[in-house]
Amino acid sequence: MTGGPDKKSVEHLLALYVDNELTPEERAEFEKAMNADPALRAEVELQNRIDASLRELFDASNMSPIKTPAPARRNPQLLRRVAAILLFAVSMGVVYWQFRGEFGPSPFADPPALTSSARTMQAYYDEAVAGGFEPGWVCSGEQFENTFRSRFGQRIVLDDLPNNVKISGLGYAKIRTAQTVSVYARVDDQPVLLFVEPAITTGTLTPMKEGFYRHERTMGRLLIHEVSQFPEPQILDHISVVKCKGRTGDG
Image 1 (cartoon, helix red, strand yellow):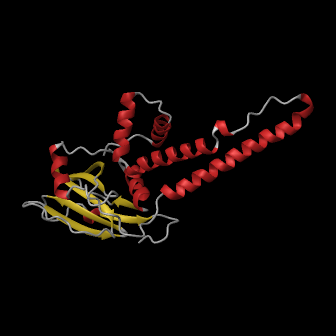
Image 2 (tube, one colour; image 1 turned 135 degrees about the horizontal axis):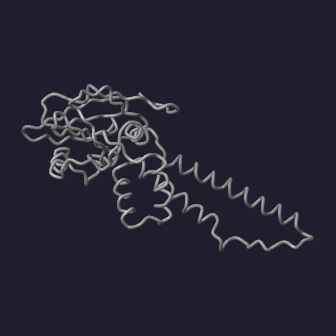
Image 3 (cartoon, one colour; image 1 turned 90 degrees about the horizontal axis):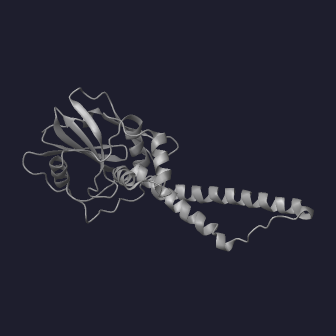
């Protein structure tokens, strides 16, 4: 698989994006990657919320300006400046961890709400093939695994894929729920899609059209569907799910 941008590059682009310092072309490319990567999108939302809260907390119009201290009152003013800096640092940390807890990965306590605008798996598959079967986000290795860790609290590991199986990347499927992630693959150069969603997702699945098959398997807290024209699963037997440390309820 072709690897996506490295972590430092992504973090740098994220900072420039939030500060509105990307060129129109760079911004469009970053938003394309963000729409395809739930983990990246969550980080952008988190940073925007943090910035908005900090602006509200430390609005310059609500803060009294600190005048240049006279020599005779140098020490008291210095203490005030140090106290203000410490207050800002502590408040920023509190805001960050509040939003980190709100938007960070957490196990699903209730079945995810079904989305009325979702396409069927068959429709998504047909559209993907008609569009050249190109994933929205090309990634592999740690980036691939971390997408599912951030989204679901569990990592998907591909165990020794056969030579005829190629994983190209991920997409934002929005199949049944807004949490669903699609995995683009080819088996003997034939397109295969995996749809990953919480195992507690409920609802009726639309039947596949003639000549297409959907194979399903529950792994940990994930439900994985494999959609293709193969009558037998080609990838599910080579997938394992690993729980993330420090999380409760992982299977």
